Length: 323
Image 1 (cartoon, rainbow, N blue to C red):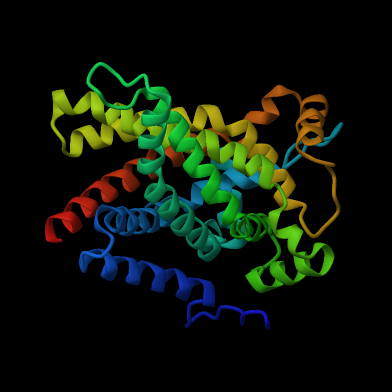
Image 2: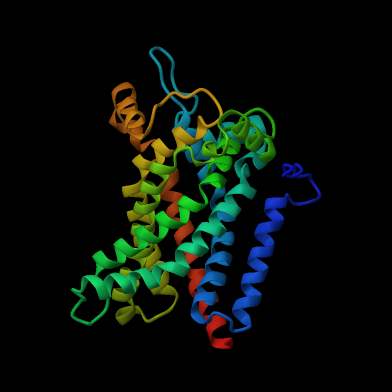
């Protein structure tokens, strides 16, 4: 099939229009009462992901650029840190460069997050029933919530890995505006369909850790905070903060490896695989290299989780009250 036309300044790209249609249909389906709470979770997570991703994308662009820069003997890094990367990017490429890759980021985030939230609760309940060992209150344990969150995230991101490959290469480009169709053409020409699943193993590993920390920790923290704060804004913000910080701490090393592998898709292959990438980074750049970009990751996770989970809870409650 022909490749999609490049996005213009006045019309959204095909992927952007697709994401908008998915969100619109999800809201219509949920408000009609079809699918019950699963439809409400889908619509709420799609809208929450749209808001959270748009508001925090600059920190993701900075994080990706910090992770792909490498140091050599006698040559210092291009960016000295988070603030320097923000300032250099804005000065040399314009402020809008901090939102590079917005369309593939939205496609990836809306699709992957919606699927994760729809299947999380069924997987959590399955683990509770099949593994037993529920808490004293009869609810799932923290371990069961972590396992369910990781499983849901890993399954969802394995499907939508191509959008992550495109997003990574658009964000790391510093020479003008790289179009999504150019990335797609280059990867397809050199590696074919498998090229769009470059870095899928560390991506699944990273997303397992991220979703386990985010969904599992948020679910557990909210359950523990509600008796003291009520099922409202304070409990949701507090639980999202716990989820965001935990996610940043456990996922950064896998995120660095994933970013390096995806950035090389369709180009010169520096690493033979996940283990080679991890060992090479450790031996050539030191252990701290596996935590490159931790500050923007942590900032992004705290803000992203707060925006997402507060929006998610509000929309889910509103949709369920009308059906």
